[in-house]
Image (cartoon, rainbow, N blue to C red; front, side, top):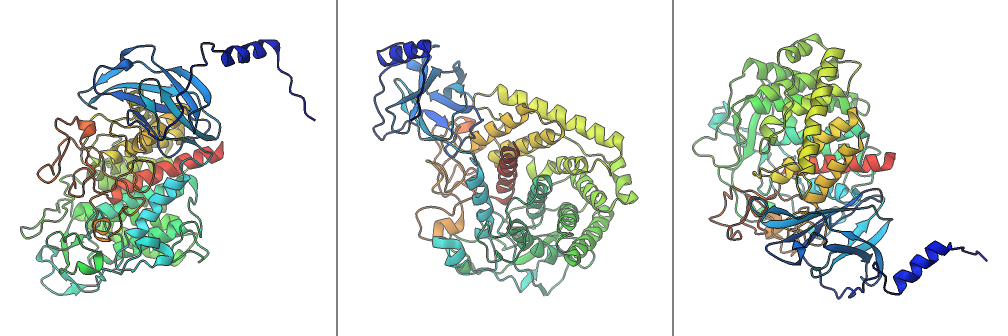
Amino acid sequence: MRVVRISLPLLFLLLLLSCGGESSMALPGFAGETTPAIQLNQVGYYPDQAIQFTVAATGTSALDRPDSSYQITNLAGDSLVREGYLGQRQDWTALAGVLAQPTLADPLPVGEYRIYVPGVGYSEAVHVMEDALQAPFIGSLRGLYYQRASQALPEQYAGEYARAAGHPDTEVLYHPSSGHSGGSISSPGGWYDAGDYNKYIVNGAFPMGQYLALYEDVGDPAPDGSLNLPESGNGQSDYLDEMKYELDWMLTMQDEDGGLFHKLTTLRFEGMVMPNVATSQRYIVGKSTTATLDFAAATAQASRVYRPLDAAYADRLLAAARRAYTWGTANPNAVFRNPDDVSTGEYGDDNADDERTWAAAELFATTGEQEYYNELQARPPRMRFNAGESWTGYMGNLAAYTLLRFPDRVPQEMHQELRQLVITLADSLVMDVDQNPYRQPITDFEWGSNSDVLNAAMLLAAAHRQEPKEDYVAAIRSSVDYVLGNNPNNVCYLTGYGDRAPMNIHHRPSIADGIAAPVPGLLSGGPNSKQQDKQYTTYEAGAAPMQSWADQEPSFASNEICLNWNAPFTYVTGYLEHVATAK
């Protein structure tokens, strides 16, 4: 029999609490109703992570009291675990539409809890887990499988989201803008880019660079059998199997001269139907410097990643990257604009400097050849972060991340300069996080703002790899908390996860499949202050920038999904899982 001895001071404290001492306030008990005024990560916190949450009010309330308290209870809400005081109220009505009281509670042991605020109510469940982000990480990768073109998704792998194949893309006509006067091309496979059924090289290659970066930074994050893919069980990484499905399509988009066609699309967006019903003629449209150099970068990086597994495939990728680089540098001004008869996504960019630097960095890291280093000396990576510039300006950051991975190959002077740049920029992002009641790094909410939050977090991860400061990890985690529920809309922006996830995303299969819940594992774009779709979407009257989000199917400006939004989510959650495992 084990005897537990309690000291007299501790016994006195326990008696005081049980008899109505200051810390023993009566709890009403959880009655099954939660309040959206308590906003938190709806998926999971790590046991060494501060419990970040925000209590928000739209006007004068009991929260005006600077001594407002909170209690953390068990899941049933009838047993006190801990209590404390809310943080100082901040007036964020102009940006977030709320009076916010951001609060950081001490970490909790593994378990499930609730937060209770007197006069406000109970929160959704607080989940504390060792692998807090593993499920959404895997879910975001599974989201790519659901986006596969030219392939049926059988129930064995897709469950209730099984569907027929669409878009075989074996006879895609050349549009005059492609430089070909007639004929067709076979270009099957790849991922649908967004909520529509088109495929784009710029927005295939840029996310590919982020996905491959995770593999290089942490090792294989999804080994064979972890994703339940048709390729599972082949003895190779499920992660790389899924990446190869996109890479194989990208290779079909290279012209004989080495340049890359910009996109494969219909002339107009298809209607809200399933892929096999969307049968309008598809075209190869345009050729551009940015698409070509993005492709060169991604395939050069992929050749490095796949070489230990498949040398022949790595050789093919590298040869394609070299040819693309040669064409891209010889044609620096091939700017893409939609032809008059095409109105699908443009992904236009007037400046290819970042793409050129990224391509040179990946080719240099892969080959070590002087030609590519000379290019880097002439055009060193520009380290910067600006919201709304993900697929036009983030490539310079990707170039720096890659060069920092190879300190033995990169000359010390360049390595040290890049290291200092990434640390300086990361430190400024940490300051931005600390000054924001929702503890995320942006105040400008553009199209795909959630990806801006996560791209900033990826930059913090790059700094953490150089200097493993806990401040960086905390800022990355709090940025993920924002995306997973600690936001003024009180929504977990990843479909299929959390207590309040988007149900009406702008995504054709999710709209047309007859299933109430959308395809899981897809990240909603997030608040967009410009509301370019307001003629189709009903936003809250006077919505502040952070509230400019609508869970409505027509909201392509705030509630669509996209490859370059899922990619940084996958990177950041995968990186945090790696950090948690390594501790």
